Image 1: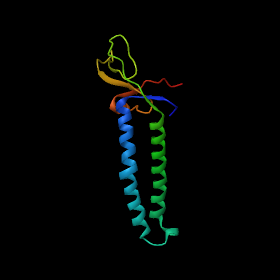
Image 2 (image 1 turned 45 degrees about the vertical axis):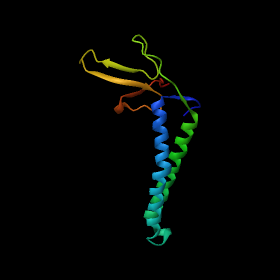
Image 3 (image 1 turned 60 degrees about the vertical axis):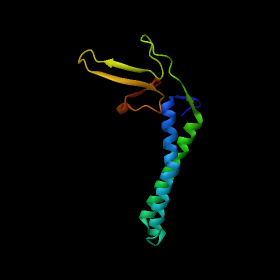
Length: 126
């Protein structure tokens, strides 16, 4: 995430919640998993222990990345709705003229983008 990357207030709250969950519940669960694997004997040949330690490294990397994103996040408030302008944070309804099928999307920062949830990145890919 680049310095000062735009994020919605909702996206910031989700980011904080995920970081809090991983730092608390995620770390506790990982510690229990490593402890249980240790009880299976010799650590040199304990595949369960080594897998748990590798997963712990992935968890810590994820936590570090989320913390970095949180430090660099810049909340951008959506301006008042305007039927003529689409902007960051706006929710738009798009209709396929061929099929008549409509979809609703919210324009968000690139780290919040989730097509299944109807969130499109407002940043153009280069």
